[in-house]
Length: 126
Image 1 (cartoon, rainbow, N blue to C red):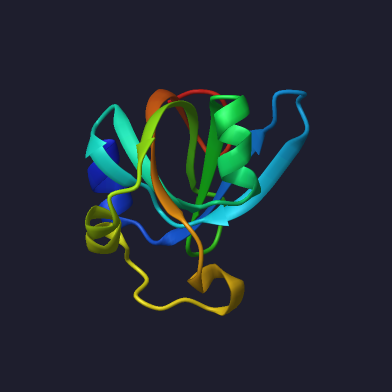
Image 2: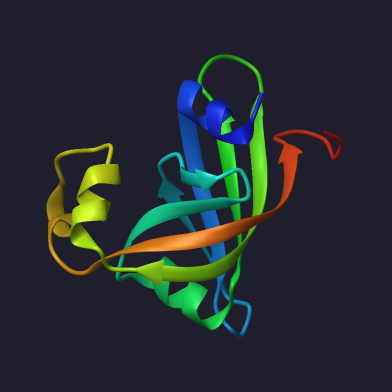
């Protein structure tokens, strides 16, 4: 199964880990990625700590845990390759059509990553 198909069909929770240029780590809950192609994905980001970290350090990791019992999912190792602020594209891609609290305002970015490596949630082999 292609990675894009996996994320289209599989429900679960995701966490995006980033670090600033000094190595201070941040972890944030993120929805499933939007696939541009099998090697390129994007996340919609607010102008907050995760976005600031990516601008100083292009490496990130995304952990996705499938719904259900057990420990199934994927770990994606990513490298930032660019971003855009096309509000119509961001609105089109957005899965959640409502916002809660502080998230409702501020700048949004479509942040693109190249998939460097994919591992299962548990273990180190495909």
